[in-house]
Amino acid sequence: MLGVFFFRVLDNRFDFQPRHFGLMVFFWVTGHDLVEASLVSIQGQPNKWLALSLAPVFGIQDAIMTKGGFGFLPWCTTGNMVTVADVAVKQLLGTATEQEVKKWTESVVLLIFTISGAISGGVYASWHFSIWGAGYGDFGLILVAPVLGSLFWMHDIITKPRASFSSRRVSTWVADRLLPVD
Image (cartoon, rainbow, N blue to C red):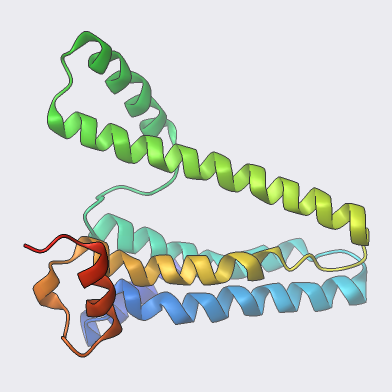
């Protein structure tokens, strides 16, 4: 709730866009991982309550996703799983609408990336444990922080019209290379 509150206040008061949160998310997640590593070196194990400090980041992400073009949360919840199964059958039968196929594609992509993230995180954690053992922080979130921050930044480039970017900004340069000309 704190992250949603934070996003809405900044969005309403200062017209913040998702790209404005990219660096904040990078530093927040990196800081979390550094604090966790120091606690592991002192206590010998991570503090499970420290995970709560990541909740505002995901609250901001949820607020952006429900406000933006998706209109739903990006987790592979039951709704996304049902969409994948239901529309797959409709596609086989030839009765799926264009909008259903679009939502199915989004749900499949979310499912693929969720499974890929879980597998790669597990492989990294196993590898790190086999090398270092249990007494050291794994710094796994530091590896993810730049990607997560850049996803916040890229959200606007992918979901907003080209005219909404100033010609002097890096966002416009990237949008010119990624998006087709209108």
